[in-house]
Length: 182
Image (cartoon, rainbow, N blue to C red; front, side):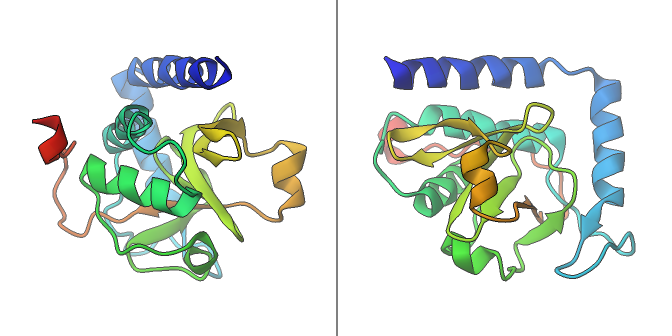
């Protein structure tokens, strides 16, 4: 029952995020372009095209759908599978390796839904940055928690990463159907 309650919470948050106004999305896009950082310092020059708010919602939709398949996978495999299913593939890495950086993700200061939340040894997907909620593989299975909870603060400094869309095109309806879905 607890798992279903967490899933319901994720679905409600996803619906709330999907109902944001167009003006709010434009503000988020503008803010995200101005808050990208490299591994050491803040930069607003030559910002690569990153996930839009709509793309982030696609990632969350894939997360919501994914729970039915593998409920006991670890955090890095769960996040990788969700991103691939949403149409944003990257080479698999462990969360500890992601902290060192990789070309498919740009570190950001202010997360948006669908971004990665990463600690040394754990990772998840940001669901609601205003409420600090993220989705990941937990001890009890996939679920949500807040990244400012004492347990996560104890794990060290949190980092946020946004997927870089190297194709340079906007990606609408990129949810990938597998043979199981057909």
